[in-house]
Each structure stands twice: as structure tokens, then as C-alpha cells.
Length: 450
Ligand SMILES: Cc1cc2nc3c(=O)[nH]c(=O)nc-3n(C[C@H](O)[C@H](O)[C@H](O)COP(=O)(O)OP(=O)(O)OC[C@H]3O[C@@H](n4cnc5c(N)ncnc54)[C@H](O)[C@@H]3O)c2cc1C
Image (cartoon, rainbow, N blue to C red):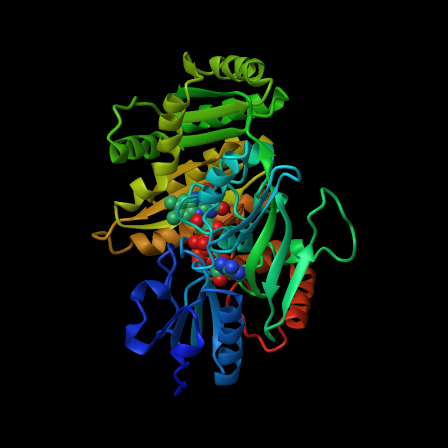
């Protein structure tokens, strides 16, 4: 197919075509690709660029793959032949910070960590904090409804989104939602676009809720003999009816690898859990967390110093990059009801043995969201097939335990087949009808999600 060259001078941002398109624009962090190379890459500088890019793509018969920072782990931003990659990371202005209304209006390309730092200057914070908070965009976070470390108390990204500005397939700019604390006018289009993985439109800006910075934070670290005991201890914390702001778990290898990557003098253990309590009751809640952990291990300590706490959290954030150093990894993302975390970790260990696969588990234990990471060694020819079979078994396990195939990374390319199993034919049909109504020509991200 021959595609006309978009006139570079009509875009404020940058235009690339053919071989000039950087290879990085073809994939996301999952490493998964689709056949062929994208035809055009437009790095939009403003909303008008987004609208022009969509008009151009529709005229030239190209589909549009919206791209934030490309840190997605489901192949959602992977782009192949016949596509225009619309990179919106250059829409990077914080348009408003309101202390009185505790909200911010922010363009899609701003990293959540940047917004959080700006909010701190007025005594507020943006609560959602995926481990990729510094390297992903808030538009991507909204498009994937990203989770993060603080979800257990503050909810996922969508819980902080009040309204959106979205460019639709015909180039129209619409505004959804509100800037009030509550409001129920009409269908909830903000929620519809949140988590839509680039299939319905281009999120160009968002109005998001900010929260008070907690008056005090206490971090509790505990080392356990094995991951099943650690999972049981996290369940004990939740059953004690305290609400830590974080409750994160790493198995032995994730802990060792993360400490190694960071150059930390670490402790050896079968599993590591880091919990954080915050707010006026932080000390009282931390005492309950400590006593819950102490029923399972003697290696528990509490830390109120922010620097020391940050070192503990850095270990959790480093887990994925540390494991990625060992070659190809399948990054799984199941969530189970929180009462079933220990059961899920036992089943994952059994699956690793059954398929003779190296599976390392870390995750947001407070949400029941586990990331079993399946390492595929390059020198083992059967490892890829065994890893895929193990992944399928892990998804089955999640559904059997009443959970989901994706707690936060999304469906993208990777879990299309599994989505049908989780939703069932009737709910899937309704999703297809909605997609077709919003994007009748199938412009956005065809072949992704469903
Ligand atoms: C080290 C690391 C840690 C991570 N930790 C977490 C974590 O704790 N929690 C979590 O949920 N995820 C995590 N992720 C995954 C990833 O960072 C998130 O999915 C993130 O939200 C993706 O943002 P992005 O800007 O990179 O989006 P991209 O990867 O560029 O895109 C993701 C999807 O959103 C769509 N999209 C992007 N921007 C827009 C837009 N403006 N409008 C419409 N659609 C859009 C794309 O088409 C694609 O389908 C992690 C990834 C890495 C590499």
C-alpha cells in the first residue's frame, strides 16, 4: 500500500515515515510485535496535531495506534503494517493545579510522578502510583486503568479520574465527566474511556482528583521463610481490618535480583513483604500490621524515616527490571479475591514444577494482584512452549479462584483469547457493540483487546 506523506509543515510536532520511524515505536515493553512496520509516526505537540493525524489516517486508510511512553505490558501499543502511530507523550503540560478543589487538569503525556511532585508543592498528591510512575504517561495510565502500589487504600487510576478530553475517530473533541466531587449526569463516559486501551479514542487531557499528603507514613518490612507463608501473613493483615496504603510481596528470587540490581546489601529470605500505613492513624495501624506479621516470622521491622522507607520500596519497584536482565520473560498479571492469595501462590508454585519453568512471583498482595514472571532461558529450546502452557494454566487458575486474567496491565494483544473466556459470549458481544458505536470505522487499535 502506498501512503501519501503527511505534510510535515502542517503538524506542530514531528512526522516520521517509512525507515525513519524508530524501531522502538513498533513495540511496547512486553516485547510483542505485530507483522510489518508502521507507515507513519506522528509525535503530536498539541490537540490540533492529534485531530490532523486522525483525519490523515482515516483519509489514507491507516489505523491509529495511540502511544504514550510504550511501557505497556500487554502489547497494546504494538504497531505493524497499515498503521499510523500517534505518539502523545509530547502533550506534557500540567494545565491547572487547584488546592481549593483538590484537583489537577493535566495533558496526556505527563508522567504521574511529575504530576505528583507538582501537587506536593501545594500540599497534595496524585495517589495512583504504578511502579512505572516516572516512565509512563498519565494518558497511558488512564487508557490501561493502571494499578499501582497504593491501590489497596487509594484505588486504581480510574478512581482518581474525574473527567477526560478525548478526540474521537471523526476528529471531534469531547469532554466527559466533571470537576465536582460528585455528579451523575448522563452515562459515565469517563469510565468507558478509562481502561479502553486505545480502542475508542485519544485521551488528550484529564481532570484528576488530588489527595492530601498524609501527615505521617510508617513502613513495615518483614522477611518470611516462603511465599505461601508471606501470602498468609498479608491475608491476616487485611482480615485485621486495617487499611495499609501498600502491601507488596516479593518471592525469594525477585528479592535477591532486585537487591542485586540496586546494589543494596540485602537480606536473604524465602519472601519479602513491605507494607506502608499512612495518615493520622499510621502508627496504630503499623502496630497492627507488625503484630500480624509477627505471627508468621520474627524478622519484622518498622521504619518512619522517609529515606529508609524509600529504599525498601525501591526494591519492590526494581523487581521487574531486575528479572528482565535474564532474557525473555512472560509477565503475567492475575488478580484473585484477597482471601485466596495464599491458594494462588501455592498453585503457581505447583504449575512451575509441572511445566519445569522458572516462575518468580511478586505483586500487589493487598489487592490480590500477583505478577508471576516466567523466565524463558535462551539456551532451552522447549522453554518457550512450556512457559506459554504454564501461563495458560495460571490464567485458568485465576478464573477458577474467582479472579481475573488481568489485574492492571490490560488485554492488549496478549490476552485476547482469554478475555472471551473471562467475559463470556454475551458480555463480549455488548463490548463489541459499544466499540463499533464509538468507532464505527474500526480506526483505533484493530486486533487489540477483542
Ligand atoms: C518497570 C515497569 C513497571 C510497571 N508497573 C506497573 C504497575 O505497577 N501497574 C500497572 O498497572 N502497570 C505497570 N506497568 C505497565 C505500564 O507502565 C502501564 O500499563 C502504563 O499505564 C502504560 O503507560 P504508557 O504511557 O507507557 O502507555 P503505552 O504503553 O504507550 O500504551 C498502553 C495502552 O494505552 C493506549 N494509550 C496510551 N496512551 C493513550 C492515550 N493518551 N489515549 C488513548 N489510548 C492511549 C495504547 O494504545 C495502549 O493500548 C509497568 C511497566 C514497567 C515497564
